[in-house]
Amino acid sequence: MTALLDSPPYSARAELEFRAELLTLTEHHLDGCPEYRAAWPGWRPTDDITGFPFLHVGAFKTIRFVTSAPGMRHQRILKSSATSSGISSQIVLDKRSAELQARSSHAILADFLGTEQRPLLVLDSPGGLRSGTEISARTAAALSLNALASDLVFLLTDAADPASVRWEVLLRLLAGHESLVVYGFTYMLWTAWAAAELPAEVRAALQGKRIDFVHSGGWKKLEHLEVGRREFDATLTRGLDPRSKVIDFYGLVEQVGVVYPLCSEGYRHVPAWADVFVRDPWTLAPQDREAGQLQLLNLLAWGAPYHNVLTEDLGRLVSGECPCGRHGKRFEFLGRIPKAELRGCANV
Image (cartoon, rainbow, N blue to C red; front, side):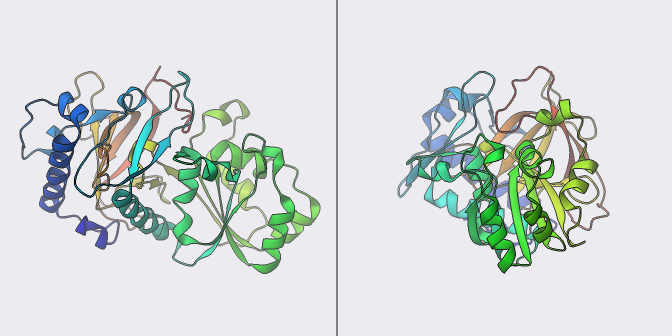
């Protein structure tokens, strides 16, 4: 178990401690996962963690990586939404990692939302919880907030239909609570809530309530509607308690347990148990200041080698302390690499 999870998420990190834990995790996967070992034959430890073995996100679409070890209990398969190729990533989940990932999500999101437990309303249907050994990316994203929830309520009767919101359920919750958390994919939150014709009694019940909206999944589907972040946030919070907020987080199915909420200054911060590199898309050389391909790492993944992943997303590292007060590494998320395959769960 990573000791770094005992630290505040955005405290200054001891680099040697992180490298030591990452090396232990990397060797664990090289020993227990033949496919991972075959991708990096003959690798030897180095002091530079940018040289540690990683996998491209595309590999998880064609290979089911599994790490075997004494006491390892693999439980479920996390699947990304369908991409433009029709092929989903498949991430094997295990009990040990799930516990670490839940602690990680709680620490990160509590830093932005506070620790008060409130009802969590999800703009999705509960179907993803009934799929046996598989769980969808949409459901996993919602469940990352579950540790902060006093109740978990799915608001849609049909996951694909924004018009299927159960407004009567929302009304009942508003009657008994002054504060709620609402999660949805970006497009669904706009379509089903912000831009929807809410029933008059719902609009009246929302007045003055504190609602914190959390969304992920990118902005691609909103481009044709020409909806920007400022309009998105203002529309959602109009008429609510001034303390209400809208939090946009970035994350990958291949990096479950670590999310990167957008801070008030427009940056995404890296928790003490994770790291982010930027690589030149052509040479893969690490970049300190230039934009490039994001590589995401964390210490939470024990059942399969998704701890060190090269993405198809673009970003830029930002130096110096952030005015928001959080410490450690931060970066700007700049969108998808041109002509990269659209990710069904991200669509950015």
